[in-house]
Image (cartoon, rainbow, N blue to C red; front, side):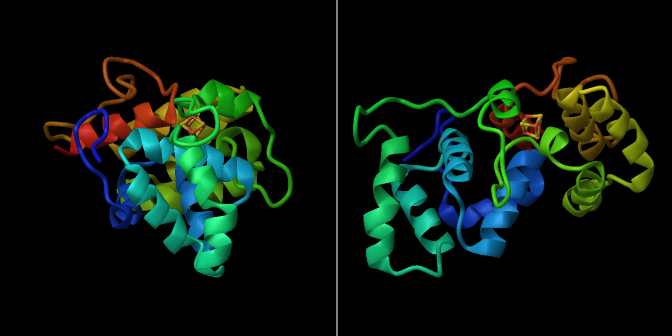
Length: 207
Ligand code: SF4
C-alpha cells in the first residue's frame, strides 16, 4: 500500500516516526500503547485514523495493532479488533472513507476520562503533567525548561494550537536549510490545525 503522498509506511517504522515527527497528542497515544500494550476505543480511533492518513496500509495497520496488543491471543485479536481496524479503512460496515480527526475535533469532541489516552494534551493534561510530557517528548529535539513559560502562557489562554505550533517551531529550529524560525509555524506562518499536517510538515523538513 502507499499513502496519499506516495510513501509506504511500514509498521516497524512507527516508533521512529513517532519520536521524530509526531505532535504531542500522537506521541502520547503511541507511548501509552507501548506501555499498556492495549488502547481503549477513542484512542484507537484517534491514533488509527492518524496512522492511516500518515500512509499505513491496511495490511501494515493490522500488523501494527496485532503486534502492539501483545498481551492478547491471535483469536481474541481477530474477534475483537481486526474488524475495527478494517472498518476504519472503509473495508467493513458502511465502507465510509473516514477522515482523521482535526485538532478542533480532538479538542471539542469525546472528552477523555480516566484510563483514556486520546484527546489533546495541551488541553486535557494538568499543567504539571503537560510540562513533564513536553520535556520527555521533545528534549531530544532541543526543547528545554526555559521554553515552558511561553508554551504554558498559550495553554492558560486556551490557545492550545498556538502552544502546539510553538513546540513545532522550537523542535524544528536551527540555522540550516529545512528549518523553521519563530513565527513561521509549520511553514508560511501557518499554525497547527491537524495532527497529520504537523507530521507531514515535519517529515518534509527532514528531507
Ligand atoms: Fe494534537 Fe492538535 Fe493538540 Fe497539537 S493541537 S497536540 S496536533 S490535537
